[in-house]
Length: 315
Ligand SMILES: *Cc1c(COP(=O)(O)O)cnc(C)c1O
Image (tube, rainbow, N blue to C red):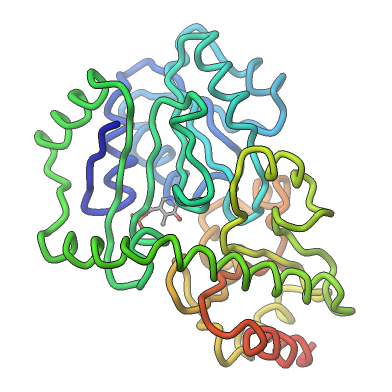
C-alpha cells in the first residue's frame, strides 16, 4: 500500500482529478461533499471533463450512467449529510467490469470503520482535517492506493502541482493519529446513544445514523463497516426558522461546519455546508431545510443528550 499526504483534503481531490483528461466523463453520487461538487462544477468542467450525478445506491443507475468515455466513479459512503451507504463491493465490481477507476472519499468512515482498498476500490482519499487528525487544528488530505503505477502517477502530479502539507501540520497530524482508534470508539459509542435518544424524541421527525437498525442501509452498514462512525443527522419537526433556533440554542454543540474533531459540532446543511447546491437539487436528494448534521465528539454522552434535549425545547 502507498500513501500521500496533501495540504488539504480538497488538494487530494484535485490531484486525483488530474488523472482525467479533457473529454473524460465521471460518474458520481448526487449527494457528494459540497466541496467536491464545487470542484466538479467550477474547475473540472472548465477542463472539459463531464460528469453525471446519480443515485449511487442503485446499481442499475450507476451502470446505466457509465459511458464509453467514463474514466472514473467517484463516491462517498457514508454520504454527507444524509448518511446513506453505497455498496463498495458493487462499485468495485462495476469499475473492474467497465475498466473505470474507482475512487472513494472515506473521510466519514475513517480506516477504523471501513477499508475500501481491501474491497477492490482503486483510490481511497481522506480529508485528514477531520477524524484522522481529530482535533480541529490541522488542514490536511490523504490518498491511499495499492497500485504502484497509480501511486507514481499521483506522486508526480503532487510534485508538479505542489499541494504538500507543512512539517508542523504533519507533526500535529501524527500526534492526532495515535489516538484515532480510541477516539473512534468513543465517537461511535456517543453517536449511537445520541441517535437512540433522538429517535424516541417527540419533536424529531427522522434520525439518520447507519448504526440504527431502522436505517435504510443498516444491513449494508453491518456488512461493509466495522463501526458506524460519529456522524448523525436528524430532522426536527419544524421549518427553516425553527431549525435555526435549535442550532442557536445548543451550549455544548458548537455551531460550525467541519467535523471529526473531539468536540461536538452542529450545523444546517441547507444554509451552511450545502448552500451552494441549487435548492431543487437539495430537495430532490432529501437535504431539507430542517435537516441538522451533528458531528458527535468525545464528551460525556449524557451531557450531549441533555444539551440537545434543551435545544429541542425551543421549538
Ligand atoms: C472536509 C471534507 C473534504 C475536504 O477536505 P479539506 O481538508 O477541508 O479540504 C472532502 N471530503 C469530505 C467528505 C469532507 O468532509
